[in-house]
Length: 329
Image 1 (tube, one colour):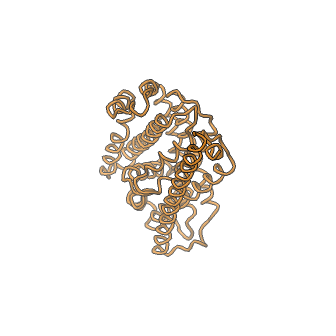
Image 2 (spheres, rainbow, N blue to C red; image 1 turned 90 degrees about the vertical axis):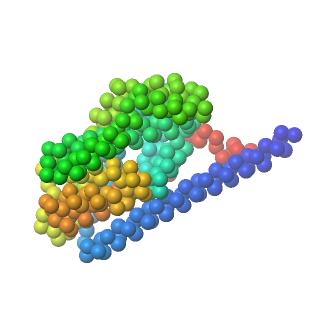
Image 3 (cartoon, rainbow, N blue to C red; image 1 turned 135 degrees about the vertical axis):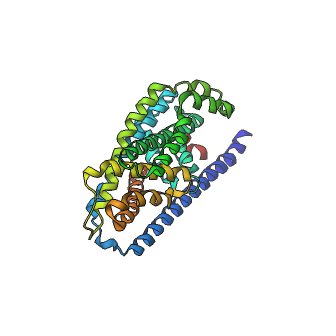
């Protein structure tokens, strides 16, 4: 009797999973395409031809971005392990970079869906994995906001509005990552109903882990500043572009822009990033460099994410916890 019932159920489960994956792919494709069209329109308005860009500098901007993401990946892996999970680093790396494509979909919840879907296995619980994504992401944003507030407070005391914004964002993103508060929040939300062992898992979130995260992610934000520097260097025909001596301002600008874009919940922080980067860079480097570097930063980061996601998805295969072939048997 069971042999007659299970195959239809297995086939239905397979096609449901296939439909969900197709929907995720469609949403990500739409988000990326929309971002690309928006960037193209902004460049046309500024009279900058794509063919004149210095693509070597754009490639360097992509590289700095991917390197800057790596410390956050390491921190996420350490967070998973601290919460009692045992993913391999390769599995974590693959899920982390591919998952970033979800941010181009409104609400950004798809980031959590993609990451947890790729990392889950008999060694990684889905609920714990989802909680760990929030820990890593909020820590990234908290560190970025604090870095921005500190640098802007030292460099741009004449613009207290940006300093206040950075401090506000640091509180908004950082307070939830305070280990006792985060543990309380998960218990308040009764996450243990989805996973009775979640209380034991979140006990692994401690000050030592968070200190490691802040140290690693701070290095990542410096790389993001270097990425903005490279993006500015890619703009042709301008007399004044940033130098490495401007790295503190560039790091603060990109940090504040990314945190504000993240908390806006807009796909890829469209529009919000520019509202931060342009007024911070324009007084020193001019309108063309300010707008051009903001647009090129977004384009180069999106290209880097697509490239690394494609490489990791097709070149790095990880065991499927419930393979489709098994389900169709």
